Image (tube, rainbow, N blue to C red; front, side, top):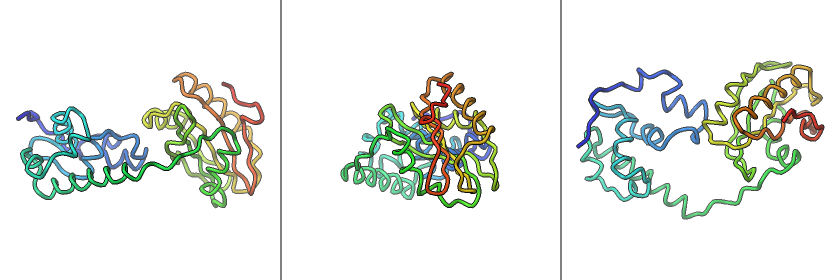
Length: 234
């Protein structure tokens, strides 16, 4: 059976490469199947870390989660580093995936306007005591995939790294993004810094072929939309 010649433990990886830290920072959509499964089993073997072990098992299944779901305890335990407890954890996870698929996914509406986006965002962004900046990832039908907090600040501002916004979008396989932040003062009118950030985000998104749909500022029971105001650079 194929083995790895040397082991690089997960604790020896850069923090940005570790599955748990990546999940916390970017959400589950940013992780590969092997990384998600590695979080479940927790550890690998003497020669492989958990990610390498799950990559090897997935390769034997031709990368198919359906084939993985057909494996039994004995099949899993044939791999060095997988015992009955880990095997049962993987089998339980596969079964939950089957049951979730059987339920059928509820239809998620496309967010076609600033009003749609505001309704989607308002419960999360209204009444925050400090300023937060979030990026909303969407697919090419403008259906939301996930939402990520990029930064938190104080009463009057927060620092936003444009590179982190774009990295989050790329890792999350988004084809479009919208960004939003709140003004704890309740007044959603943009500042000069908001204008500059929006221009930089528009140019950066265009450079990597990601649609930049809007920058919404949430106030008290109202909002400001850069798209509605015709102030997007792309």
